Image (cartoon, rainbow, N blue to C red; front, side):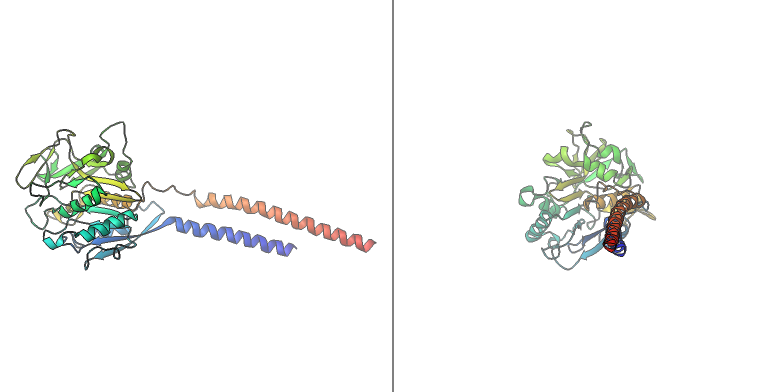
Length: 362
């Protein structure tokens, strides 16, 4: 009987330990599929976004025990459809090219909207007006997508000029760098908190203070018109000294809110979406000699925090207690079971011995 009890105890012990071991592994690893589009004439392709895309393999600080695995795939040979979006957790769509064939078709917009309804996340990056036709933002595709199915995604739009072909450009005569008024320095904490001080926007906290706190960013961006969502979702706003200009040099100032929005985030059912007025700020394009945009201030850290939020990794999941405490908890249960099993076995053994003796005496 003792032998059987010991076997039962060992089976229980191994089962519990194995269960804990595999659960611990499962909790510390997260796997995602990210699709980066290059089919729509993007100037900011994998070459110019090399640092940002390489950072996908190192999204978390080393101090964290969690591990994130990214399967990065590129779309460079077909338009979006239900097949190439299947199984994708995050779609990154940077500023499309200016040729007519680079625009999103109606069927592509429908496929992306279906993808979002099924829980996929979107990162849409426009770009501002520049002297280079390749870099200048051509927001019609992104705005058409946002407007699809009666503003299914959002009422937000990348702001354009009168002919709707090019984005505008945010300018700040006071908070800038490299002697260029359009290279805007932004204090992220003051720029991203909710308009009403009484309301703290959880999206703001999730992105600006996700794993690495964002303090200052360097922008070269278009502005975003938010429509009726300004109070709920505005997360990236400039200083009140900023204004925007279009290709006709018309100046726009938001006299009502006193700021311009350059980054916008929103939860849509089980999916998430971010619209950025800038692709260039996350790119390897030079801002000056031997200086890249992605390396300015906290731009790279912001990129990582954005990706984490879009992958629904924020707020950070509650950590399990240290393994030593978890093991102690299971050890207590095992010890209790051991006492019960051995006590039962001992009582049964003594009972049988006593009964045998009784039978022999008779």
